[in-house]
Amino acid sequence: MDIRVGDTITLKKPHPCGGRDFLVTRTGMDIKIKCCMCGREVMVPRSRIEKNIKGILH
Image (cartoon, rainbow, N blue to C red; front, side):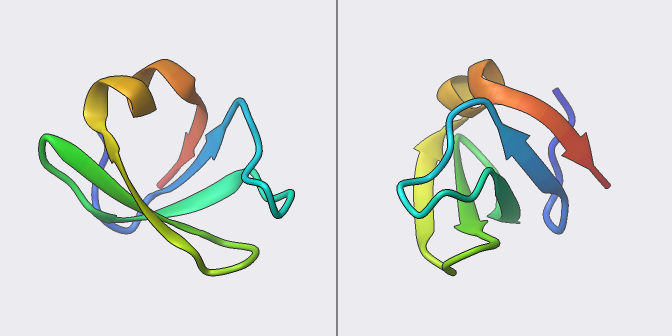
């Protein structure tokens, strides 16, 4: 899956704040995403992100 820095991804499960959209700030073996609703940043393994992506906005 082609995920790049600056993409906005929508995940299947929402963040505890209620937001589903995340901004990709770093890629590699782990992907760093930032919640578009509350601003919290999380690092998640690439395999887990690829499994839970609903859509990508470039």
